[in-house]
Each structure stands twice: as structure tokens, then as C-alpha cells.
Image (cartoon, rainbow, N blue to C red):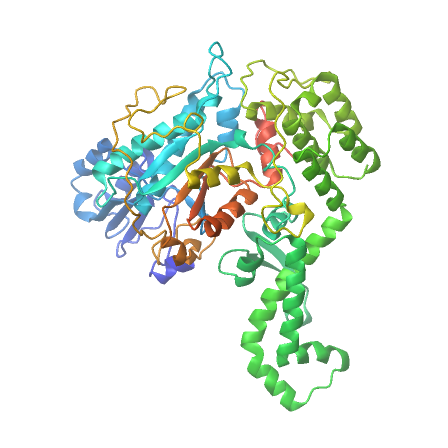
Length: 605
């Protein structure tokens, strides 16, 4: 909103609500090119007394020809239109290297137990358009690679679920082909790389405890988006006031510490506070005055002089000291360190069912959510250990409910193996995991490859390996085919009726330097300060960008990896996804997969 008012816009309204006529003012419409929106716009601006003097209309993606004809037909509206443009901005920036298409129900619509695929196809169509607008607004034309469908053998039917990345890649490709013809200055040969995968590549990243400051804030503090609410002392000794702050790129302390391990972040905050107080006279007085109430005039004068700068700095520091303190308290009270150690041991093959049962019997006060997350990790690493009675017994030991176990059972839908059997979830509930599936290999421990002081930093998302392979051009063409290849090999057909045109051969030309954001635009859905404008200009001088898109929700650990690898690979890595989920949201979405009568609002973790 601050960015918008800076541009001289005094009022922002929803077009579906009744609005006061302002016939002496111009209006800017930023709308999706849907029939409903166009009808409302035409009714606003037609007739003898239009709502506004002139309309400047900006569509968030390409508008169908028939809707343009409808606008053209209205002779009264035409002279009142000041602009009619396609902006291609159907995504939210979540930070300088991440965006979401805001398909919050993608997991349920695409991976659920639906016989009817209409919802899934509609969801993929919307997602494809939105992903494509990222490339349109950045003037980038990608090599499009995707995870191929994995048929177990020639007799196995490929399921819709297995074809999700294939179908999304085909949808994005269709949009890109139109852009090449219709958008001015759109590149005609490849400028970057895009890899489309889905949540099945890594079922552990969404539920494991990630120990960085950013992830811990969102996992443990009930934040809403990037908003943190805390109490500050009231003015003039009044009652404390609730204050909202945004933990985002415009906060230098947040930028510096967000990807640090929580223990490291706490140490560095303590050092910052100590150093600030020792250097800053006003802060010393502020701290010293509490004890003895006496202050010389000179001291007061110095304090007043230092105050404006001091108050902002000390506020930011105090805020982060408070947040880190709260997180450390929760870690201690919930005994999270031991749980975190067991999670990492499971992932790297150093622990199994025996250790999980021992943990449940000795740590009975562990929260239901934490027990559930532990079982989900066990189920993802050792599906055979959750079969039938074994799964039931574990559920009893952990004292979890049938509703909790729905989430564990629904992991099978993210297991990549076809499973068309319907599950009856009654009190004699038994887990049915595909035990013929090869035991999932435990992750290779990479902690030796990098400096990692903290034992709980061993975990890494599978996506990290994939991006490194993209960068080295080592991705298997069989598992991750490329649509720009003149003879693409499909493991399944893309959208029915979609034609893959013969694209140009691979272009080796050096990449251009389009800006990831115009300096004045505010197109993120999180705050008034457009975070994209803080994007590092150094990255733009590097090699071709790598985009990775995850269907079904991304995690904070995956966003962190993109920042880390940009520096390591000397290429800007940008993460896209249908949504950004914290563990609690992901588990709620998993519970909904096979429960059509439940909605997001009904479920509590």
C-alpha cells in the first residue's frame, strides 16, 4: 500500500463490492482477464454516468480475443479507456528469489483420491498460465525440463498423478509459444533453465524440523505469512500494546540471520546487543539509568542526540532477541533437540522403528504434532515398516488418532507408486503402503562436503542435488526430459490436443540481463515494500538463471537452498511453487487428500 500511495493512488477497492462514483477521477483496473471482471468493468464505465472519468486497464495475464471484442463493441466505453494492457503478473513474490502461484489447494486437487480429473486439469491450467507469466514479465525463455512419469513396467498404467509435471510442462510450453509470437522483445532462443518437479520427490522436507532461524520462526511461532505479532510496553505506563512487524528483506538483521542455525543466530544476536550497548552512549545511559534514576543534564543531552538512530536500532535488535529467546524456550520445553536428532538419524539411515518406539515410550509428553511428524518421516524412509499391524501398533504406542494417521496413510499418494485402492478409515484402520517398492535409499550424508558446525544441520532437501545436477548439466534425460529438445521423448502424453511445435535447437548465447523487478513495482503479496526490488544486482551478472518449480507446495528449507546455491553455483536460483507451506499447513493439506467432506477450516492439527 505504501508503494501504491507513493504513486498518487488514494484509494484501493475490490471491483465486486459496491463503490462510490468518482466521476472526476481516473481509475486503474488491475484484474484477471475473466468474463466476470470484464462485465463489471464494462458496467462501471458504460451508460450516461460512468463511475470514473477514465479507466486504465491492466490485465494480469493474456486476455482471450472474444473478451477484447466484447470491450470493442461498447461504443460508449471505448473513448473512456486510457490504457488496455497485459501485464503478465499472476504470481506473488515471497522474497527476492521465490514466488508462488497461490494454488493453495493444489495438493488436494492433484494428488487426492478423485476419480474425476476435471478439477485437477483446471488446477494445472491455471498454474501453467501463472508460471508462464513469470517468464513473460522477466522476458526469459527457458529450457523446460520436468520429472518424467515413472511406469514400473510396460503393463502398469500411468496415473494422472504420475503425469503432473509432464502436463504442467506442456501447459507452460503452450503459453511460452504464444509469448514468442505476441510479446515485444520476448527472446526467441533460450535464456535460462526451468525444472518442474512435484512434492513426490521429497516427502520429508515438509515435515522435518528445519533448524534455521527463518524456519523455526514459522514452525514454532504461529506466524501469519511473514507477520509476527508481539507486545510492546504501553505509552506513558499504560497497558502493553500489540504490534505487528514483518520479517522480510527490508530488515537487515533478518536478512543476515534468517538462514543461520538457531543456535548461531542466538549467539550472534547476543554479540550484537553487547557490542551495541558498549559502543552506544545513549543505550548505556538507557540501561544504566534503570538502576539509579539519577542522570546528569549532559547525559540526557547525549541521549536525546543519539535517540532517533538509537531507538530504531535498539527496537530491531530487541525484537530479534525476543523472538530468538521465545524459540529457544520452546526448543527447551518441548525437548526438540533430542527429537531433531532422531529425525536426522532416521533420514540418514542411522535409526529405525526400534529407536522411534523407544522415543515414544520415554518421551510421553511430546506433542501430537511432533509424534505425527516423526512417524511421517519413518513412513517416508521405511514404507515397509508401516505395513498393516506394525503401523497400527506404532499408532497405539504414540497415542495418535485415526485422523492423524490419515496424514501418514496419504503419504502413499506422494510415493509416486500407483495405488488405486480406496481406503476405509474405520477403527480397524490399517496402513497400506506399497511394500514391493524398493526401500527408499537413506540420504547421502553431505555434512563432510561443507562446513557445518551444527549436528542438526545435516538434513538437506533432495532439491539441492537436483539443482546442482541442472547446473552441471548432469540430469538424466530419461528421468528429466527437456521439451526444447527437437525430438522430445514422452513417458506420457501432455495435454490432449496440445501441439509441441518444433522449437529452435539449444542456444548457447550468453544470457541477457533483464531485471528481476522494476524498481517501482509492488507485486508481492506479503507487504507494502516490494521485496523483489532488493534482489542482488551481483547475481544478474552471473550465468543463466535456474528456475525450479515444485507442484504441491515448497518449504522454507528449499527456499534457503536457492539462496545458498546462488552463491555457490554463481547463478541465480529461483524457487517457484503452488504455495509455501509450513509443517502444520502441509499436514492439514495431507489430511484432506482423501477426505472430500473435510475442508481446510474443519481440520486442526
